[in-house]
Amino acid sequence: MRLVIATCEVVYEGRLSARLPRAKRLLLVKADGSLSVHADDRAYKPLNWMSPPCTTEEGDGRWVVRNAKGETLTVTIEQVHLDVDHELGAEPGLEKDGVELELQALLADHPEAIEPGLALVTRERETGIGPVDLLCHAADGSFVAVEVKRRGEIDGVEQLTRYLEVLAGDNRIRPLRGVLAAQRVTPQARRLAAGRGIGWVEVDIDRLRGLEPAIPTLF
Amino acid sequence: MRLVIATCEVVYEGRLSARLPRAKRLLLVKADGSLSVHADDRAYKPLNWMSPPCTTEEGDGRWVVRNAKGETLTVTIEQVHLDVDHELGAEPGLEKDGVELELQALLADHPEAIEPGLALVTRERETGIGPVDLLCHAADGSFVAVEVKRRGEIDGVEQLTRYLEVLAGDNRIRPLRGVLAAQRVTPQARRLAAGRGIGWVEVDIDRLRGLEPAIPTLF
DNA sequence: GTAACCAGCCGCAAT
DNA sequence: ATTGCGGTTGGTTAC
Image (cartoon, rainbow over all chains, first blue to last red; front, side, top):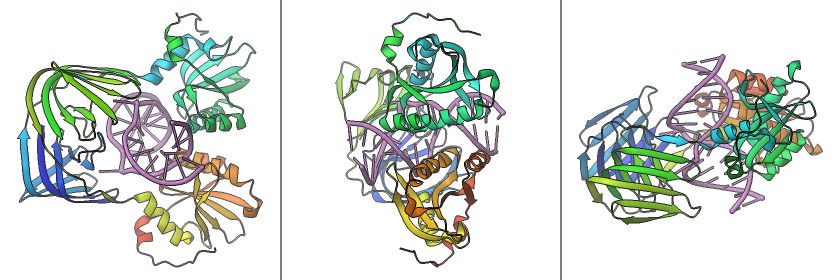
């Protein structure tokens, strides 16, 4: 990993055109070949960058980074304030406990938290246009397709709507309705869901975490 | 901007839980208070980070970064290989020519590229649930709501569907239909659009750039 | 490779 | 503050 602090100008030509007038910035060159240009703000987002795979041509105070699509990032360096190179070695890897996956697993174990009497049929049921998170069977005899989100917004309702359109053609799982299950459901999403005949429920992930696996799956 | 290369362990507790076992990494501390932890790959993406506003407590080989929501990023430092601090000064700012905006502007000047005889009524027409990119009037007397995308995918069709649902209630712009205009339209989006009675068109941005403004707006 | 979907998405603008 | 929405979104996975 090479760290350069330099007074420079930067031009990106690719999916858009972007120009950075002369200023002091961090140029971060990683072992994967990528280059990021950072200012002292914008959190972790660089001002400009080129993602790998790409190649850098360096010479005469000018770096030209290119990728296979012909996009270019050109850095014109006026003055170098720091230029260091460090070998970092292999990254052992990031372990994550993601929220949506955990929420889906918890709800799969506790479908009754979505609606009393609900029982799991299957997870990640394929529809042909993507998998529906949970397919359940309700106390009233109907099937319920559940879309699980950390945050229930409009696009979750849209996604579930698409799945329902497809699943409606399968008469083995009729009658069918849809429910959006999320930690929070926004007012717009509630309104859109209501207009589409889709239910919604807010679930408390901390309460779910405290429960023991209770209801076995149907199949 | 402070650049530290250190052998460290990192734990994030917040919207999810994440752990990084001991390894050599870059710690990037910006003037906005943000901290990013980078490995030598993943392009510009850090392994872990904390966005501003946040505060860092540093002491005894341990950094604890907190934000207002109680999320924490804890870095336990075993060995420091580099620790430098540079004043970057103000960033003069990034100038961008975005693609969707340019495409929308070009199509506003050349609605006939969407469909012969089309004339612009207005851009960014408010619907109550967000602005529709272009509202036009067609040769057949109908109004046409146009959603402009760089890449026409399912969510563009969904978005336009929502707008059409709302705009259908306005009888000053009847009859009304919808068109998705993009540089490319994916097969799935075409299929979904067809099922909803929505049209689609692929536009050549380079050809549009070469045209002179031709058709004046109606209003 | 294409396409759909998630992401601690980020960041912006309008409500 | 919320919410919709674009992004040079990036990255993963299934088809």
